[in-house]
Length: 554
Image (cartoon, rainbow, N blue to C red; front, top):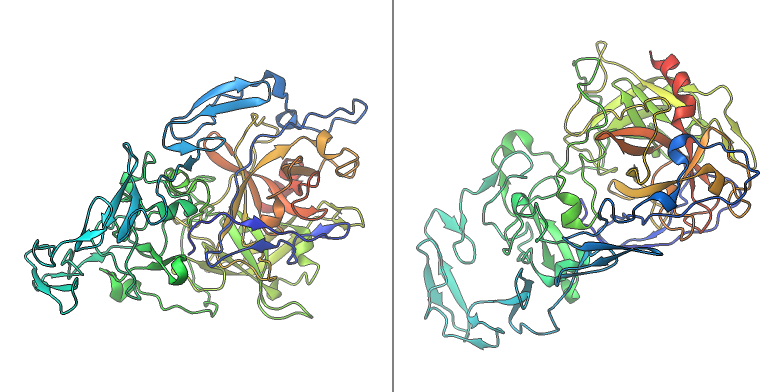
């Protein structure tokens, strides 16, 4: 698991058509390995009146009729004012940024000399949390150790030999530097409901306050509407607000670098749920469960997570239809492991890109993983399947200009007649409702493991929010010059470039929200270079192939 951080996208120029199976997305990653970016609205109105209009109704955008302040784009109770260029947000005193998405940092360097500067909800919007025996307001002066007992729960304070040192002798039922945690403190399942007082990592590092100004680098905002229900407040206790493996916290590493680690708290059910860390691939796990899922397109994740992390952090359960298509063993120069993404659309069917199988069309060469977050590790929630059948579209064509009809289906090999098991981490995405319109500003997302600047896949599942682009705009001469046909669509940012399908995987999903459900509208296919202006990612338009898909799987 990695904690969110804003990263710089570094792309390399690719020649002509770039199927995104290869390692072409280059990022500048630190030790946290997570990237995401949310785009602003784009003005993609075309000016070539003679161009054939290939757009379905939901891609014909008329921005002149839209109110840029409806819905309100300003976050954190900011107010919106329409302008000639779009909108302007007026932020409350604690926030700044185009959409009031950034918390203002009132803490100055060395303000709290022997303590930690944390953010507060009222003026002056900060306070110093002093390390005992130093005292407020600025942690510059100390009291005599043990003159005021800092030990909790009946603990005894013992002065040390050094001038300001001390130790706490705790009763048998308590532990910690100040006897603040119960000795039998533990968490259930993955610890999302853990509200104990452990504040030490597995390696003995002291946790930072969740309200620390240092955490602004990770876009963490404890003043979000749902921060309290996630257990985040003005304290340093371990929590699991993002559905990771167990409670964790941030701490200050060497040279002041901000790091995170899991905490020194054990599972209440550790004898049955503890899973050793390993990089080896798991064996087949049979699932004798119903053939159909109860719902489609409804991920299980906390709505507050995006507010806490400013849209910077994905979770294990946010994209539960994400599949990892992997080679079982090396074929030619291709190493075993993850090669493409995919989308679970039925318990036994995964939708992906045709060009993923240019290596081999033999099902025995592949395996599919569902419910994965960490691509290189065995995980307790993952499901693995062999492949029974691969169906590539009959008219798939790889030309010098583009990939046409780049769509394929994989049928998972069932066990006793059953395939995927619907869980919190494994669900299907909905197929589109035929030619049903999508409104302007529909939320659309891409996901996958991408690649790093070192040519390796990210350790953790990544996602990004993108905007659909009209066919007319994408087919302009400066973009794809009439190459795109009815089986393709564009998404990303025409004017600025940046995040596009390079952040996902070939064959991976582009889903859009409609009526509260994620529908699969695109398949990551190809693009001309990575993240450049006027060169957004190109996707298979799923609505064009809906009848073909249904014919194969029904």
